[in-house]
Image 1 (cartoon, one colour):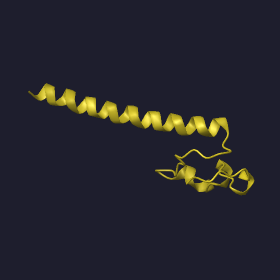
Image 2 (image 1 turned 90 degrees about the vertical axis):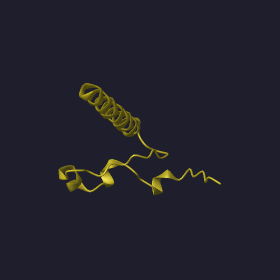
Image 3 (image 1 turned 60 degrees about the horizontal axis):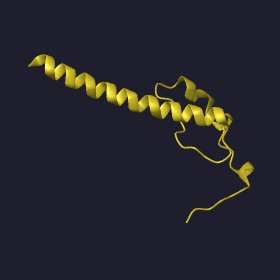
Image 4 (image 1 turned 45 degrees about the vertical axis):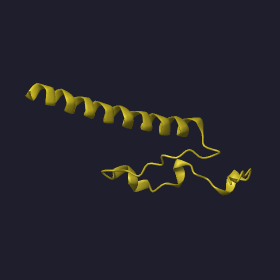
Length: 72
């Protein structure tokens, strides 16, 4: 059963709460889940990141298929 909470100020999932030094890491931590109370910008960044990931995976799969055809 899911819980619906209107007290979103207790759970602030904004980017301001993240580790500042994570921007300098090779693989920065990214929040890939959408929560109630997020801004449109935060949601669009998450959706964009997921779409880019899917496109990269499809590109790599197509690249492997093309390379396999070229070897034959």
